[in-house]
Amino acid sequence: MQMIFNKEYSKYKTLFEEKLNEEANNIKSSNETLKKAMQYSLKAGGKRLRPVLMLATAELLGLSCADVMPYALAIEYIHTYSLIHDDLPDMDNDDLRRGKPTNHKVFGNAMAILAGDALLNLAYETCFRAVKDINGISACRMLSLYAGAFGMVGGQATDIESQGVMSEGTLLNVHLNKTGRLILASVLTPSALFANLYFNELSNYGKNLGYLFQVTDDILDYTSTEEVLGKSINKDKEQNKLTFVSLYGIDGARKKAEEYYNNAVSALDGISKTEFLIELLNYVKNRNN
Image (cartoon, rainbow, N blue to C red; front, side):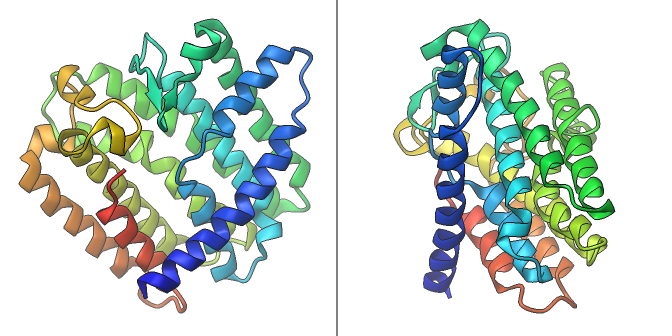
C-alpha cells in the first residue's frame, strides 16, 4: 500500500510541478526583481501537500485534474505568499525555508512583502480566470474566505497574540485557522466545484488532517534537526509560542496526533475509493520534515 501511495503522490506532485513551473516562467510583472522574487519562492520545492490533496480529492469526486488545476495553483500561490511573510523579521524572523535562504534574505524585506502581495493577487486572478459556472464562483469564495481574516490570516493574528497563553481553546482556534483552513480548502474546493458533494465528510476529514499536520509540525520543531527540516528548529520554544508540545508535552502531543488521525479516517466512512486520502494521513503523521 505504501508503494502505491508513493507512486500516486509522485504522480500528482509531478503533474502539479510541471504546470507550476510553466506558470511561474510566464509570470507577467512590470518589475523584473519582483518577478524573480515571486519565482524564487514558487520554485523552492516542498511537499506540495495542498495541491496534491486537491488533485486527489478532485479525482475521488469524479473531476479531472485539469478541472481543478487552476485552483491548485492558486492555493500554492497563497501558501507560498504566507511563508514569505511568515519568515519576515517582524513575524517568525527565519533565515531558512526549504533548505534555502528565505525570500527576504535574498531580495530584502520590502521586496519580499511585495512578492507575497503579488502572489496573493495572482492566486485570485488565476481562480477567476478559471470560473465557468456558479460552482466555480463558490470555489473562489471558499479560497478567499479561508485564506483571509476568517481563516489563515486570522489564525496568524491570534498566534501572535497568544504568546505565553496556555489554553487548549486558543491553541485549537489558532491552528484550525492558521494551518487548517488552507488544508480544508484543499478538499472543499473540489467539493464546491461538484455542487458540494460529500461536503460534511470532507470538512471533518480536512479539519482533523489540519490538526494532525500541525501537531506533527510542533513535535518536529522539538525533535528534528535543521538539516532534515530545511528550516530553523526550536523557534516555537524560544519565542514562548503556544503549541501542542508546550501544552501537552511530547507524549501528549503524540496521543493527540493519534486522535486526529483516527477522527480523519472515521470521517471518510461511507465514501468509496478513499485509500489515498487515508494513506495521506499516515504520510503526514509519520513525516520527518
